[in-house]
Image (cartoon, rainbow, N blue to C red; front, side, top):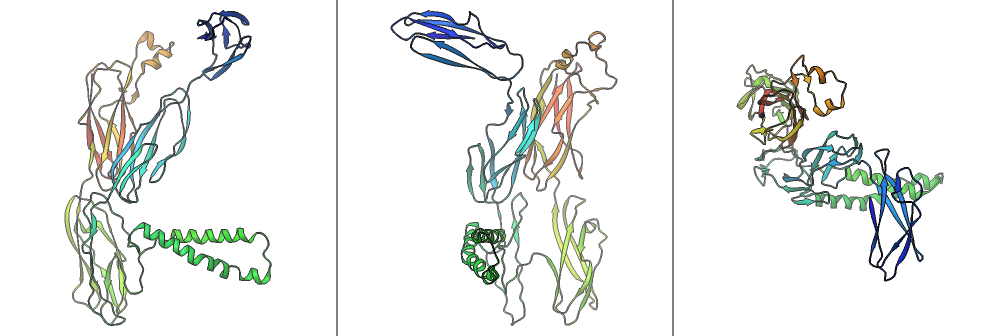
Amino acid sequence: MVLSLMNKDKFLHVVKVSMESSPYFQLVSSSDAYRAVPPGASAPVRIRFTPSKNKDYCHELVCLTARERIVVPIRAIGARAVLDFPAQLDFSKCPVKVSTQQTLLVRNVGARAARYQLSTQSPFSVVPATGALGAGDTVQVTVAFHPLASGEERIHTKLQGEAVDVNVGLSTNSVELDKTFTTMSSHRTLFIENRSNITAHFQWKAFATEEEENEEKRRQCLLRLPKEVSQENFPEEKETEKVKGDHSALLSSMVQEKMSKVQEDPMLFSDDIFFIEPMVKLMNQGAIDAPFTCLPSATNVGLCFKFAPEEGIIAAGGSQSVQISFSATMLGSFEEQFQFSVAGSPVPAILTIKGSVSAPSLQFDLAELDFGDISFGFPYTQRCRLTNSSAVPLTFQLCMSDDGTQPAVDSVDQIRRDTDPAWSKGIHFYVEPREFTINPSQGTILPQGHQDIEVTLCSNTVMEFYRRLLVDLEGIGKGVAALIITAR
């Protein structure tokens, strides 16, 4: 390394250059040597650096003139952990109040192990937030975007997403109930219609917006908490005067506990007169108790349904909620009738259920993954993306068609093993080599989510490759999707 001393003065200066003794840094010329530097000229100072380990080093060079002392710090930076992380992650348009996730492959391309900590801000989250990653290793990181209102969200980590309202609504904006007598009830049915491509989880809330709900919670905290804490929780302490310590700290703790309970309140719709119930109900409109039994269905679709409870007794004027479970075994639309036999009634109660079962939808973002011309024994990596456009999460496993089982030989590793018999006898495989590596080879993709896939080919055979990357889905089938892989 060469350092230049420049004289910017109008007079000649004599400079003494010295350095403390070090096994790693030495002056090429003798230490404590004097150098005469004319005005406007420069003098080179050569420093030899001899490291013993791959680590950080530091030292100092001292330049002394008749008027000043200049200390020049010397730094040598060793190996560093370098995480290969995308500069920006764009979620595009996402439904409001629905968590959308993307999975990233983070690789440590540096020469040292890394201990990392990832942080972000709401409505974004990241898992795992901390961890360790060895040199050359890869970890999956899941970033979630959960917007609570429409609009664009952008934070300094360059995670970006746009929240939109999806097409989910009610079949009517108003419900008018028939007139009824006191203590009697009247019923109307409306539908929640989901015209989007996501699963909609719903609640009947007391307030139209989250802002109104939070305002009500703040109002309850202000109006109720002081009275409850001061008048109801301290009567005994005031009378007996047995409480010792800081009353203000105890009061603060009780206030925090009460406020926490208010914040946990989901603020669901509740009324003494009106009720909203999403379950199927058997209603006894007669004057006597009605024992009932769900009659089993022998059809293929009917066997996919389960009812709980399957039998029971409904009191006069009462009702029984029935929970329905459905586990599909076939695709297509269906319409099925189920009968509930009621003792004393010649005609059973009939429940008709309609629906449609769709096949899972997985797509690769490429029609073909082409490695082109590659060298024997050297690994090459290509990337693709697998997208789940279904309304349910899918658990997948990837495998390569016609690939072997014995680990392939990497040329770099082979060079390091100079005593390996393969140098004189050649490489021999007892079984076909496993030349493809897939990362990740399995996982779960959430609805409307995707997974980035790395495919690495280390060829141990001279040939033209034509393989298929196959996708097996848990509980559904094998080879439900495939991507063509070519190389030469």
